[in-house]
Each structure stands twice: as structure tokens, then as C-alpha cells.
Length: 340
Image (cartoon, rainbow, N blue to C red; front, side):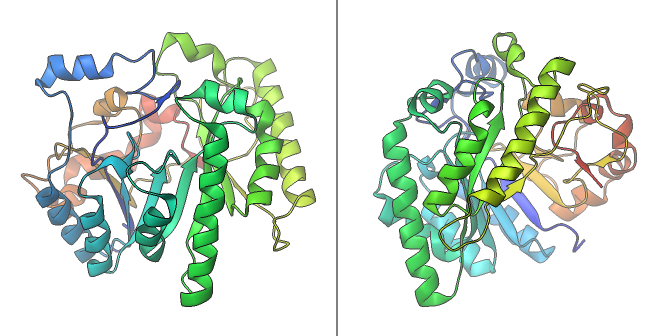
């Protein structure tokens, strides 16, 4: 089972201090938390730390090398986050963090001192090169403060690297939409100027009718616009390097195939199956990061309160998905599949 190298723990998905337009749970268009309460009687899911320890210990025994704390919600609001960092260090695992960059509850430097020594990558959600665009997409964000936070975090990162030799990559994490990606070349220039290592992202999961028009996959014309942006983005990364002379790495910024629209080409593969697992705050096991309601249609893969991770990935239901995922309706249109 050494192919499994990373797990994601949805430690605190309902805890967030922003309301990003595209967020499944925190968007102004979302009724997710109301539906959650109707279905479960729970208003806020928070993973007990005993479950965190159980899953991480099992994962480490399987050879898993990285853990991602909640990609839904803001993980730095999880009250046991310090314990999670300490456990990762104890088990020899690296933390791959996705944060909205507000660094709540502490100063940026206090957070950096805790995160940088055990982190492989810190992905900061970033959705504009201008105040107007960034704050329209990530409602509640202060754009000037966000830039200051990145500068201070990278300053600490660089000092730690000089003193210890451990390098924590910093990434801008984007959602590709028609109302923000016209600024992608400028986002890359900003990333280079700040010393950010990588710009990556994914196409919009349109959870709500109100944002369906923002997808680049809606029409051949929109696909054409995206493909022109991709060309400009790669040219910008070459022409505008970081202060150290290296280009900003671009990931998932690739052309769309016009004739396929929402359907993924058959030769695109799932980057997750057989390699990663997702654990909900309640212990449910998922094979990928597709939207919560959609990925339930892939099957029932058990619960960490009842099964070990090794039992889950050895089970027939999981192995069947690995074999035939290309035939599943969700997988055939998945935003995450990549060219071989």
C-alpha cells in the first residue's frame, strides 16, 4: 500500500471567516449548513482529536507521508491544530496546508513558527490580482492585508530555510472562473514579486445555479477564452521570474479540449485513486475531493470508526472504483482528472 502517500482530514469544514462565492458551504448562495442540520441535527462538524490521531497513525503505518488539514473551512480555526502539527512531527509526516491567508487567532509570524518547520507546502487561496476582483470572489477578505500576510510568511519561510535547510513551498491556490481569470497573468506577476513558488488551481465546481455562468466549460467561446489565458499565463511565468531568477511554477493551467466541453478526455487519469483518501469530520471515508453530495454517488467506503484505512482500500467497493472510474458519470466530467 506504499502508493498511498497523502490523506485529507476535514477537521472543521463549517468553521470559516470568509464567504467565497464558489464555496460549497460558505458561499452566500449555499444552504449546505441548513441541509446538514436537517439531515444530521449537527450545526458544526469538528473532528475529535482522538479520530485525528487514529487516522494519522494508521496512515503513517501505510507509508503515507503527508496530511492535509481541512480544505473546507479554515483549518487554522481548528482548536487542536497545534496538536495536529505536533502529531505530524512525531509520526514523521509533513503537513500540506490550504488556508485562506487571513491567519486568524495569531500573528502571521506566530503561525509561521508553528507551520513552516513541519510543512511541505502552504497553499494560500488567491483569486485576483486587484482588490476589486479578489474581494468580490473572497467575500470578507482584505486584499492589502492578504498581500502583507504573504510577504511576512515568506520572509519567515526564507529565514527558516537559511537556518535549517528545510524548505516549505508557498503556493497560490486559484479557482478558474470567468470573473477572475482575466487577471491570471497579473496574479503570476504578483506571485513572482512576492517570492511565491507556484500558482495552481482547478476549474469551477458550480455548486449553485447563480454561478454556473462563471464556468469556462460552458461554451466553445468560453473554452477559447480560457485557452488564450493559458498561453498568456505560461508566457508570463517565463518573462517575469521570481527575485531568485526562477519562474513561478504553473500547475493545472492547461488548455481545454473544445469539442469535449464538460466531458473529460478518456486519456485523462484520476490523480487520487490508489494514492489519497479523504476523511470527513464524522469519520466517513471518501476516495476524492469532489463536492460532498456528488461523491456520495461513487459508493459507500465505510467509516474510520468501524474500519481501518487498510481495510477500506482493500475492500471490493474501493477496488471496483479504481478499475472502472472512467465509466462513472461524476468521473467523466471531473475537474481534477489530468492528462497521462
